[in-house]
Structure formats: C-alpha cells, structure tokens
Image (tube, rainbow, N blue to C red; front, side, top):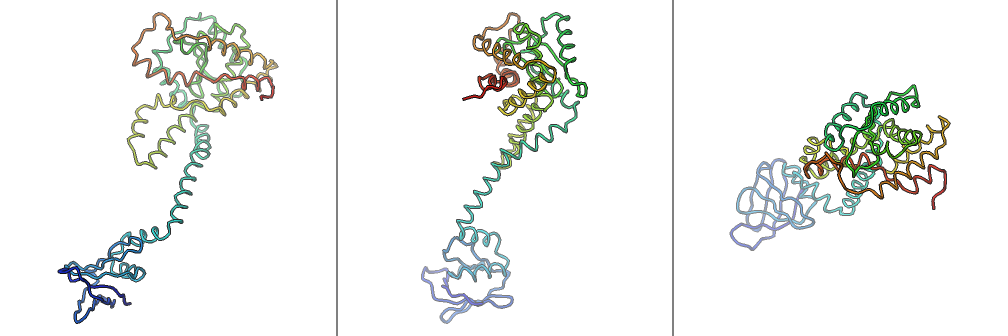
Length: 355
C-alpha cells in the first residue's frame, strides 16, 4: 500500500513531495534524496476531521501529511492508532445518517416516555403487594398530619359511613380503609385516595353532602382510583421519568433527591385526565350495579364545584403552622385531593354529549 503526500522535516514550513510505503512491519517514507523507516509500533495517524489532510507521526519532529483518507484509515487500523478516528470519520462523512439516527433516538425516547412508561408502570403497580400500598398510605398520612388532623365527626357518624360504604363494596375485592380528617380550608370538601388500600374523606365533604348516596358515589370514585392503583402508577411514572431524564442528561443527583423525598413524590404528578375518566366510569358502573341512579354522582360533583368556587384561604382555628410546613405539604395534598370538576365530567356522567 502506498500513499502520496508531503514530507515536513520539522525545521522549516516547506514540505517536499513524498511517498509513504507500507511494508509488513513498518512504513517507509521517501522524498527527494531522503528516506525514513519507521516501525508500526511508533506510527500514530491523526484522527480524521472531514476531508482535512492528516499527519502520520512517529515521535520525532518530522512527519508525513496525506489526503488519502481511505489508505490513512487502513494504516491507522494496522498500526493500532485508529482509536475512535474511524468512527468519527464515518459519522462526519455521513451527516444525514447521523441526523436521522439522532431523530430516531429522540423519537424513540419520546414514544417510550409517553406510551411505554405508562404501560410498564401500570403493570408493575398492579403487581405491588397491598402491604406496600398500605405502608405508602400510612407514610403519607404521617407526613400530612399538619394539614390533616383528627376528625371532629362523631364516632357514630364515622362508623355509620364506613359500614355503609363497606356494605356497597364488592365482596370479592380487598377492603379499603376509610379515614376521616379535619383539613385546612384550602382543601375544602374533598376526598382523596392515598393508595390502593386507603381513602380519606375530609369533615367538610361529609358536612356538605347530606345525602349518603352522594357520599357513596364519591367513595366509589375514590375506590376506582384505589382499585386501578392510580396513585401507585403516578408514583412509579414519576420515578421512571426521573430515571429516564438521568439517563439522557447524566445528572444522577436528581434521582438521589427524588429517593430522599419519596413520601412527597406522589404530589409531583397530578392525576391524569384519563385516570379521572376511569375513576368516574368505575363509579357510574358500580352505582348501576347497586341500582342507584348515577345522577346522585353528578349532583355531588355540582355541589362540590360550587363549594370550591366560593372557598377562601382562611384557616380553621387551632391549626396554626409555619409557612414552611404549609408550603411543603400543600402541593402534595392539592394533587391528592383536587380532582378537576368540569362540565365535561358531569355531562359524561349524565350521558350528555359535550360540545
């Protein structure tokens, strides 16, 4: 193999036409009346940069330069100095291919994040032991203690509602624990699902909805979230997206911080509209199974919507806490408690087409 190029002696900037011949174990550079023999072990070929001429070096001041990219790549490979230069040269010479590969990679990541992660996390969430869900709910209740304090409802009323809800659950499904709590006013009349095992009703929603069938309809909506493990899915999706982002950016610190704040991770992703639609559909189906008109559910949502619109930020007496405590917990509680009540949801429950 022979390469044509230019020899530079290292003392002047003037080069001389030269020829590089590749032998079995060495290279021979010939120019004018001069010649240099170099062992392969001493040969270094510069990495390719597009079609820019490249140097062949051997640890001395003089060197050989050539534009014969193909033979230079072969020489680099034979001498063991190729490194990543061949790959770099290939990528630089095929820009369109590289751009297409980047676009395909980005599209794959987006599709995985949008469709793959939800499917995978849904499957994992349904395989989680109920004991794990119960522990997660207990941890959340502890962390939200400054905002969800002991209920002021009578024990008789709480037991009556628990029994009423239990009587209308499917006998073949795991029971769900129902807690009652007095909450800060910004939560208002509400119910929230903490996991696949635990539902919380605020005192305010019990006081607002005097019709127990309306409370049952709200319970069945929350039961839908619990049965379909929506909280667990939300948490797993949050962690998965954080891991994916770390994979893309290389910032492992983000995952470390998330691991330290897992009790609050639920609050970083609101219920999706799809989760709400599924929980509403579950409640309507259960009401129909029980022979109860789903209109009670629609009426309950209307009352809750009117109540939320008129809700102030005044705090109940006896619940004074620092601004830091409020700020740390409020985001979590708002996500768990605030289901978007819209005309579309109410219309769907009533079976009325939306415009």
